[in-house]
Image 1 (cartoon, rainbow, N blue to C red):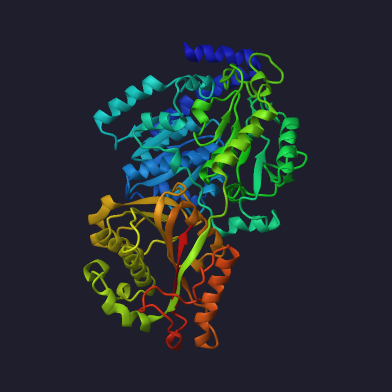
Image 2 (spheres, helix red, strand yellow):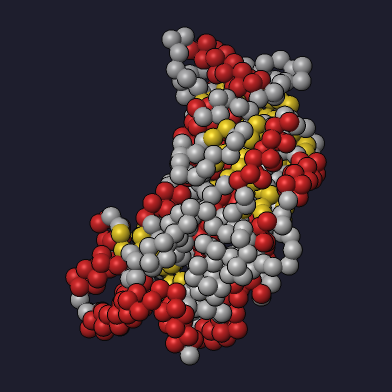
Length: 636
């Protein structure tokens, strides 16, 4: 009956011709599904049908069909920017349950894969062509071990799910499902359940899906725009704003909408911008070139990629918007937002740390009919739910957030700055031998690693002065040295250990003894520029090869963000070759000290080289191009 009712409503909205066309597509789909079943034993036919269903590069098609190693899991999530970001939280939940799985993501547009550039969570991305999802499901049933299709509730299918778990998931799906066959029509029903999109997906998938695991893996190049477009404006000295919507939301009759019923009036945004400017803030407008400029704001419309937009959002004091993709993007970079809600419900899409604004009693009508985003379903113009939110509501919320959680550049002091080479390390190995377990480190190269020994020396010296419970290790690449360091920390310290990396751990290079400590560490996916750790949540951050990143100041900002007050950063850096080897130590340290000074970090009256232990001091006579340095900061 629901399907017949939907067909009748479709006819009322779009007429006989488009309704007949839709019915034809459905019937054709059933015919092709039958063909797919007949072709299930032919890999050539399956590949051809798969290519008909998706946009993908040939190599990625081969990854699904030709490489059969390991557990293979598909995630299907068709939507905009916010939905694409939801993939990150979902993928982390899958990795926790199936750590060795290879993940294949199916999204609306292949360009959405750029959001996860360089991220090791996913094996391949595919863009699903219009009206071909039914065919794709049939193909995937033969090609993957497990599939998750997310429409707020998640349909879970595959042989990896036990019978008991399958019964539980089906029961939960039946309880929470509101409109699977009609999706997205009647999405508003989910707003009545009092659950977030993360809670709905967790309950129906059997996964732990948390909004804290939303992330976008930023890289050094993404921050070039801060100097290019913001003219060197310092982090946290501006507020971002957005006035727009998903322009790709188009009805079957070809009609769309430049702005949706969930957009707030431009004139009101203009008044908010004017008031914030009077208070000394620079307001930066983000969005597409087709969106209207807000008078008074610094316009970056159409000038940034999605990743550059995330980089600008990351160092914004706060973000102003209506419910939409950039709010989820701000969440992924740990920036709070003021969000005006109307047709879409706070209970479903809101984040607790944001200021989620509503007014009146008329809400939650999204997809109550197919034209909800073009006109208010109740006939008010403009939409009453948005009209009732005032300029004063928004500015008051901004003041509350700025007063209670104003973001500022973290303050720190330089505790140690040392340079050393292999000779210095060899001289101190007797001192370190009591802390080094050769069984854990496994081979001489690890014992002689200058970076590791500096970190170990600093950790050992800190145990006598501070107590720490959370250690975060940040490294863009996972290698055997990193595993040795993790093993050492797990064996010698009671603190919990967290590794931030974009690359999946490889059992082939991990040390055997590390597996014995699996309960003491976890993997937090993210980059050195943006990780999922919350503000002020760890006691020590270890950064290996600090200077290997072009914009290492932003690596340090991120490390200081997650540190508690009094927490410690331990970082190592390399040397640059010089015509006179005795100059390299001075040049390298001077470069680091200059960078720290520009960030407002000073040595608190201590000399340039101020190693805490005599084993790591000036070694100018034996510094070579393979030498390294290290420094320690304390967050104030």
